[in-house]
Image (cartoon, rainbow, N blue to C red):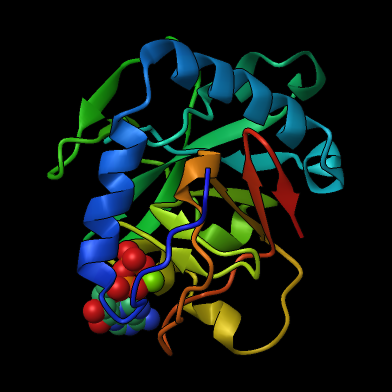
Length: 198
Ligand SMILES: Nc1ncnc2c1ncn2[C@@H]1O[C@H](COP(=O)(O)OP(=O)(O)O)[C@@H](O)[C@H]1O
Ligand SMILES: [Mg+2]
């Protein structure tokens, strides 16, 4: 797939284009991509040693990371899903996720674990962030809510090695170059069904 060449200032139209692209993938292509991504992720040094791993519930054609939960190399890890926080406004905390346990839709309609116990981003060893778009340098375009940027704003100051931020996407969501805003938090790595960018 050829990288898109669009004016990167036009974030909204770029989001629309890339969202349509990922939604256009067939069910078969999606399943295959999810399997291939899980293999790539499980082989990454950051995931080999991680105990606390944040995934997300895929919506809008986002690549499915849930396969990782049952991956042979990922036994005895603790998995988490993001939950919306009111304070600080529009940030994320992370709640333990056990496959098969009930989830409840949040105000955006995205399923969250039901329990009240949540952990901050700093408690995670690895956070897998859904990407709407990305470039090879680790710039991230999200869905436009800025939730991960706000949650990870502490990364702007200092050089915490934890959590390792790994953006994940279908390969067709790569663009040549994304202009990052001052509040955008850069990724440590990007993994797709086809490549890993470090
Ligand atoms: N650390 C932050 N503090 C306050 N607002 C923020 C912060 N990070 C992002 N935002 C807000 O979130 C909005 C969406 O951010 P953007 O990077 O465009 O979305 P996304 O990362 O979801 O693609 C921005 O308009 C910005 O004002
Ligand atoms: Mg952003």
